[in-house]
Image 1 (spheres, chains in turn orange, green):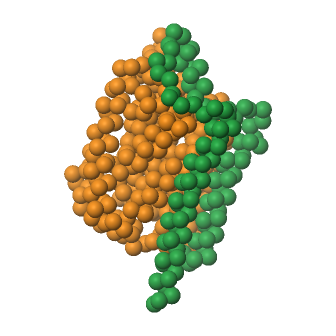
Image 2: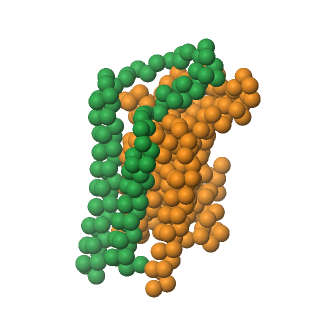
Image 3: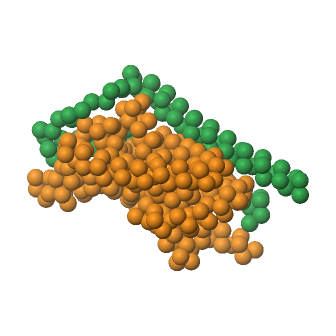
Length: 259
Length: 100
């Protein structure tokens, strides 16, 4: 009985917050990743250099996880596929335009953020090559926002919420939703750095790009949070053993992975 | 939470996501719901009118239809893998219960 009321309370809370955010923030905007060729050369190179170390460390942690526990490969596939699906879903937003979620929160909470830096980058590479969505020159910047900053935020938010005594599902919801939103805030910062306004500089540009990228993303971030909780529910019902195993794995090597 | 309660809350999650996606279509009348890159492109052109993209994609989908085909394939492939994994886990856990 107690659990039932708790579940109801948390669901209502999510609903109320979602409704408030959706109805309370109307402003026209569009959103996606930075397009091919739309970052000046020096910034394109800069973000590539920033993103590469994370990718390499991610590859290492990925091989370590799969070598020690080959049975986790399917779950890894699921985390990658979740990002793959969500970044293909262009969902209409209250701002009158469409954008897509990122799907990186689930994998970051399951396997740690470094793993997602690899899986997320692969999704971005696929979209850049086959869909002309994002780009190769901007891949470093897009990987930093979606495959690095988002997952790290998700991981920290999840752990912080749990530490503060939050319920696991609330923690998952917050981690996925905020990671999604942060991805597009970082994109706005990247564009503002590369294109400071003649009047008002970085900050004026940031407001402009955030109006395009971040606000459209608010309801989508909530959708992503809800979908991540949905998959988490399934995993908990049908595969609790591996979730336990992952908690043990993360406790051990996480010391040298906490960047 | 027992199994049926969990099933119910899962359905509620799905309904909430669908509602979030459909609500803008109903409440934001007359919007274009265009794709996105173009808006950022316009903003860049406003801030720095002289800027020209210095690199082009190797491959661009031939038309909007082809692009939506590719996006649909991406979603289908991903959803297939997610469904496969969840289905496999479900079957495995039910078999274990059966054996006990």
